[in-house]
Length: 272
Image 1: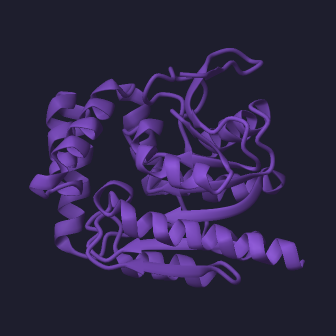
Image 2 (image 1 turned 135 degrees about the vertical axis):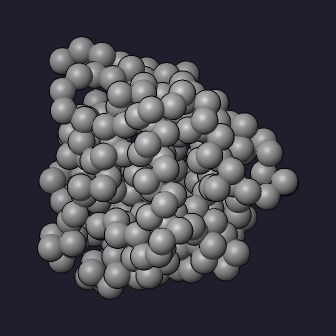
């Protein structure tokens, strides 16, 4: 697994496919997960000629926490340094859930780093819409602080990947959660509840695709609709039957939408 060593110290491990490809697609994982979670997207993107890079964000996977404030803004700054450090600037950036918030912050604070943006089952501001959603997030906060990581991992994977056929993906996510730095996990969970860039969405000027799974029980589809409406010219693709982990539970439909988006971009660039 390749490793990037930031000038200020620390290390960021990343998965890479088609290293001689160009330009680069950077894939940002969700809370508790790691770059490996994007494995079903590597080949379709590489076949388009892209270099594909999926970092373990600091505090997750094989990347230790680098230090400093645990926040979405801090993580976006670290990812900006990573993109420049691995020679990916400007990159096509894709983020799911927490990774989507980091991708949003990255685009707003470091627009020169981002060539296009794909936001998957994510939000500009998270507001639970039902008692069930409130209870789920409250339970996650309590378990993350008071109970062992095994309970946290079991609760999350059962909700995000509930179907029997997703056992392999469920086990991968569970392993990722158990490997995450507990302080960073808790810190980012709190940061996600504070995250709010609704009043800055109009600043985004890169081609943007929002992808929503209709069965997402973590980020309500209506919140994602509001996100798409807030970004000038954003496309919105809805994948029927897909859950929060759409990249793993509905990879064929997700990859089809992603590939189509990049092909449209390529055609626009040829005629631009």
